[in-house]
Image 1 (cartoon, rainbow, N blue to C red):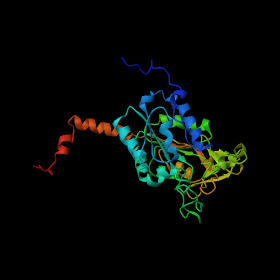
Image 2 (image 1 turned 45 degrees about the vertical axis):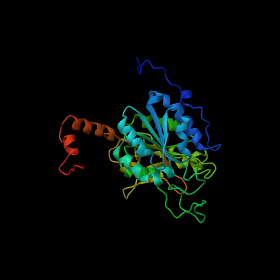
Image 3 (image 1 turned 180 degrees about the horizontal axis):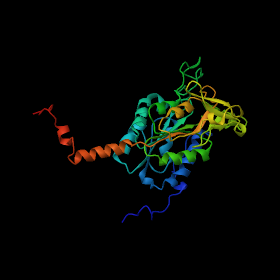
Image 4 (image 1 turned 30 degrees about the vertical axis):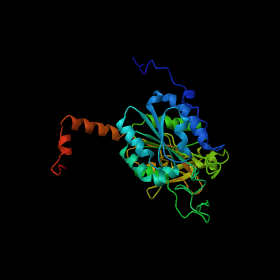
Length: 342
């Protein structure tokens, strides 16, 4: 008789490590993310054989090799698509997707937005290092304007994607951002993402110390992070800076802005509500980040709302069809426009 969930021995973080040699460049932010995920996974209380990691192509996509669960190193940009098929056919699984900024937002952009709008029950970890690392340092969809790389020797002419603005525009139900080196915060975000029923997108600012070193130094350096990181806490006023000296306020033209806390009416300070059905304020928060310098970058959970997941709705529809309810499945398959080939 198989063990029940209650009697099954608890899986430890060590058991989520594989015998594979971890082969990222020394100092890469991926090491910290991997360690954080491996330490977090036992919290799921899910057997390792019921957890799947699907990746695309890129440095981050080595992830399935290093996590002792089922996994698939798939093809460029299609990880969310493959994960969609898996999650809809096997609702008993915990399905995680690992993609880089180029993988997810360039060749995989169309697949990503449709997974988000459908609200498939998958958790997407988007490693954003603002560069193509595996192919040796070309500019990516999130690289800043004017970025000088091997593929843009005179500077990139492309304005960068704001990954979380894209996600909210696609009606994502869970959108968050964390930083590779902040293991405590990243664990909290992963915990919330795992509880969410539907698609959860977690953008992780990840340092590439070979081709884009220091891209997020303003957010990590103790001397600058207080003025650059805007922490988001559910139900609390959005304050940042030393001792909360700066705040986020509702702008006069419908958007959001920043101000000195002492100079504004407390009622004008935005109180963060990730559970608000209207995503306008969450979208406004994503627009505060300066994509050129990384100043004023909100970090935390932007949106976390409930909506039926795609796989749940699909299962209900299939059950209705198979039970002979309207419309009958056989009638749909053999409608008026059919031919017999002899």
